[in-house]
Length: 165
Image (cartoon, rainbow, N blue to C red):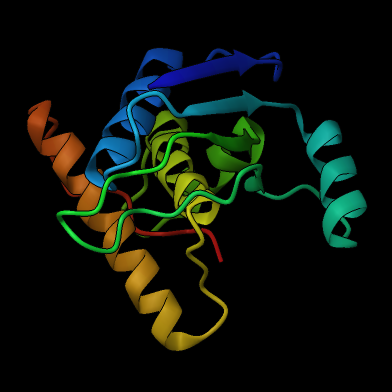
């Protein structure tokens, strides 16, 4: 996978963990290994501008996804994945820090950013959470990916509960 992580937020984030969990998520979803993804961390002001420009909603949000080639995971095990540009996942560490602190289990900004990276990748792959059935599917898949990644790394404790809506 060609994954680029750029931190333009001004905050220290675990870029390697973001890269690793993005790579893990794409492999779990059987995305072609030569596909490309960009993950960008921005400050609250930049995220607020993007949120207003693209969603017509005020205020900064935690994560936004901007798909390019609208790639989808193969629907069958014998189907070959298609190569292409996945698009961009934009993260806001400031919002992630507040969400992590406010979560019932309380977790770090980096744990929240890892969860949000998976969330953003799933959006790029066509998953959504507008309808209850979609939300159950997407958040279940998100939890399975985060738990699998954390388990492989021997990270203790439960994975962060979804805080994004």
